[in-house]
Length: 329
Image (cartoon, rainbow, N blue to C red; front, side, top):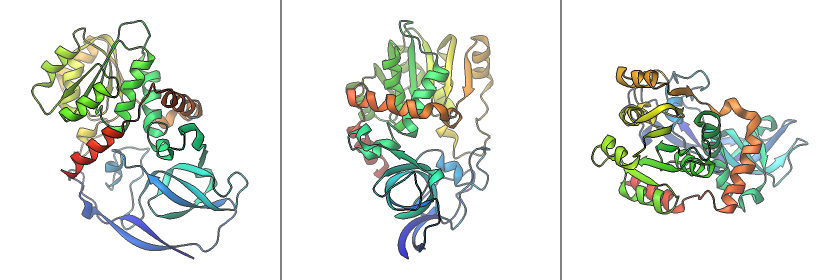
């Protein structure tokens, strides 16, 4: 038998509350002792903390495809680790595996059907990339741009990305540039993040929504209007972007982070002015879920890993450090 540490949900913040560390606790638990047929014992290497997890803290997640975390139960999400024991034919000891259903504990017993084997050489040994640029955030960015963005090389399109300093937004903007957008503008929350987006990740410009008027800054950064909007945040920022979109533009509805602490349905309702802009300009705005495109994930991971190796997509170590400092402050 193994003694492991795990993270459990200690209490719920409520549909209108803000999460705090006290909503979670770390405890010890027993794993084992025996593997069933079709199971493996994995050791956790990396875990992913994602915005959608806020919804899973509620008793009702507001989304039919998201199950709530149970009180006093181990939380789960994206994870990557290594197989230590195996009773299945498809996975062997020392294989590196990932899953969307990884329990937040040091070692786990998992069914092979929940795991996907990954090859470390795809990411030059940077295994954490399978939870970022070459994982779910990267796939969300890639498939969102390709399935809902309608980016056309040579069409002189301008893309705006909100939440542009995040795991998904930072990749989405780079993909927009690689796929053919003439101009890519990011919206984020500090001047330092803006600098990294432009100087390190190749964005054309960046807007700090905490400084000055977002609408005015967008007009300066997008002189020809906005054709594609990768929407991670919703709320007033998205209202400002949509107001400046061109006819026949496209909103990639990826996330609504600004609304996750509010008791509203997903996706949240739009104000009348924004709804009118969508209709009068024939702007598409369709809900996008990467899990609806499972058949394209394998090819997407290969494409993303190739771009990372070639340097066309950069994984910003500086950006991660900036974000961590902001959280600590």
